[in-house]
Amino acid sequence: MAKLSRYAGRTALVTGAGDGIGKMLAMKLAEAGLLVCVQDIREDAAAEVAKNIGGKAFSMAFDISDRDAVAEAADQFAQDYGDLAMLWINAGVGVGASILEGKPDQVRWAYDVNVLGAIWTAQCFVPLLQGDPCHVGITASTAALRAPEGDFPLYAATKHGTMAVAEALRGELSAKDIETTILCPGLLNTEIWDGAKARPERFGGERRMDPKIAGMWRDAKTPEAMWPDIERVMAAGGGALVCATDDGETGAAMRQRIDAIEKGLVEI
Image 1 (spheres, one colour):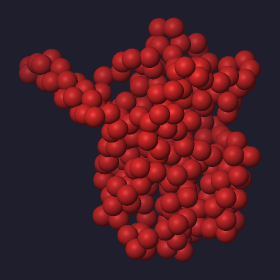
Image 2: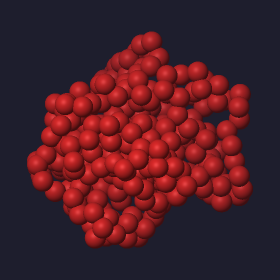
Image 3: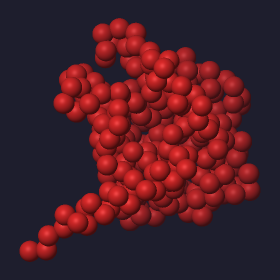
Image 4: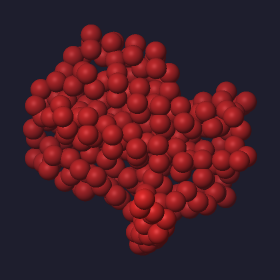
């Protein structure tokens, strides 16, 4: 708790905190002494997490992919709470689709949430950050650090976009003396791959992940495993943190990608 004591008593907002990594961040920040706004598109999920946290949390429900909805929520937050010391841009969705065969609605949904949603959240809530210090966290993915491959190339492509937004945002925030942490989680037991349940109308009805596919995530470590390192990086003023849980596979894939880029470099 002492590591984040400089934020104690102040307010944090975590998007996509109805489950998974966002829920973990909300709970741990509350334990560290912050008042946490638990945001999710699902009002019931956000309210349940806030209720479980107790007096150090409250909930808000809005769609981060809707710029007008995000702006309205930010105005409401400013009126009701004012002080914002920490913003975690965490919300994201997993879409199991390819680039060539992804349905138009799938492609739009994935980019609207994972890329544009991060931009809209930053545009509307960063101006509310007050005091010293202030901190912005952005959740990307190890998928952003390797060549898109496997069964989820569309998801990987969007997370490359998330990472680009995070890196660009870090530069802009540094000029404003706002600390940033970029988190790139690996394979974890979260519910991101079952995200269609949050917006079934985007897919024409209720959609759940195939239980056979879900097994690899259910057997993985939980998001709590990342917290000691997240807390350490944040307490040190921010930085980039890659939490890979795949026995070195991510490191090897990152090196392969870098090598391929270097081999294709032509100086003219």
